[in-house]
Length: 91
Image (spheres, rainbow, N blue to C red):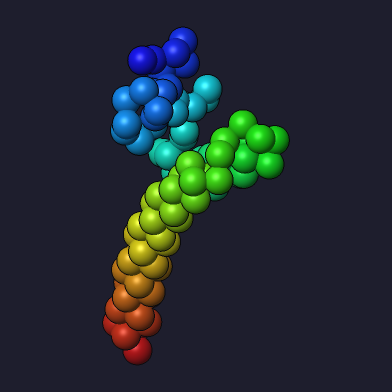
């Protein structure tokens, strides 16, 4: 049975529930992903998100932040190579 929020009643269905967030996660950039992490924390601290959903959400968001970090590291390496090439040509 589903309630208004779309949360499955585990006792009746015998399945894991999936809760809908009342807000849309923003994942388009590192900044907005970090803001989403902060909002998830505030929602959990306020009792609006249970512990398991909080752990799952923070793990998923951490993976996304890690991907952004790798992307940024690659950008830095590319820029460093370009600078080193310019210095090498100037000699």
